[in-house]
Image (cartoon, rainbow, N blue to C red; front, side, top):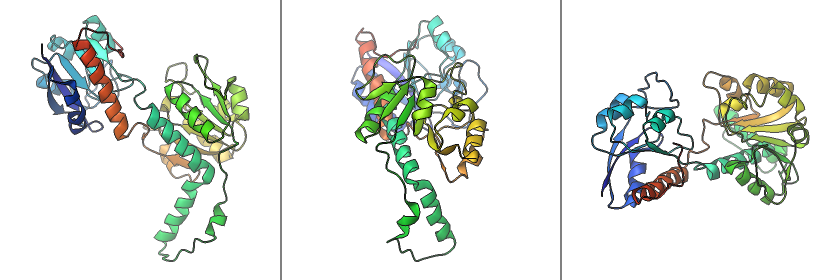
Amino acid sequence: MQHSILAVGDSYLSTDDMARILPELGDGFRVSYRTVDADDRPPLEHVREYQGSPTAVSGWLHDEDVLLVHAAPVTAELLDAHPGVRVVACARGGAVNVDLAAARARGVLVLNTPAKNAESVADLTMAAIHQLFRGVHPANAWLQARARAGETHLDSTFVGGEWIAREPRGFTLGLVGYGAIGTRIARQALAYGMPVLVHDPYATTTDDGVAFTDRDSLLARSDVVSLHAKATEETRHLADAHFFAAMKPGAFFINTARESLLDEDALLDALLAGRVAGAALDVCEPDGRWPEFALMPQVILTPHLGGATVQTQERSLRMLVGDLIRWAAGEDPLRRVA
């Protein structure tokens, strides 16, 4: 039996990316491709972080029994209009653009790709640690200012003396959250000679050289504190004024996880007061304090680059390919959320 897939690309995961990997499904699948309009975002209930309109996606669906998406919204109305769709394959760790309750109620299998970006987020976090310790961001800003001023000569033989910094080895890294990403960061940090402390009440395993402790002890002892907890109501504004007051004076703060974990006002106050020496943020509230952070020389601000690698995209698609092949063979997929 041949299955038919509608693969819907977006501004983040393109159909060209999909077309490089999905042929690995083999002859048992026929694939057609469409791309949503990234600016078409009608207000929808029960889904979030989406691009495109379910009406447009519905118009592209015909006899397909598999709908593969990354950011395209999948609503109850869409599923009702196309009862032949048996599987929604979502190339994200959290299928937040899919109405999971509606899918469960209709017996639609929803696949996802947990930890697809674990390697790339760990790499970005470790890169941020190095940049914070070495003062790369303010040093680069100094050079840019000289270039804008019209200077053309740079004798860098001894100018590095203005930027004497520290190597991370020997300094303690504190990880708040120890899932797929946290464990990978710990292994990299240990390889650089950094002692690693962890606080995660839900973690069940640890690596050699990693020490579990309570949160306040971790904050008081760590030279770098990095957030890797899940975004839940319980963890909203986990990093608040008390959190920063409990941190070791002059420590660095990193958030490459979710913006909801951070009270941005509290971090801004801590940076301005000098209690926190610097920060690296890959996620920010859309209408929050990011313009102020972007202008601070001690803050590295990036626009959610954590999972933005070719390898992450390929991993997510190959996860779905493997589970769709299992599903077609009558086997249980390895990754499902509904």
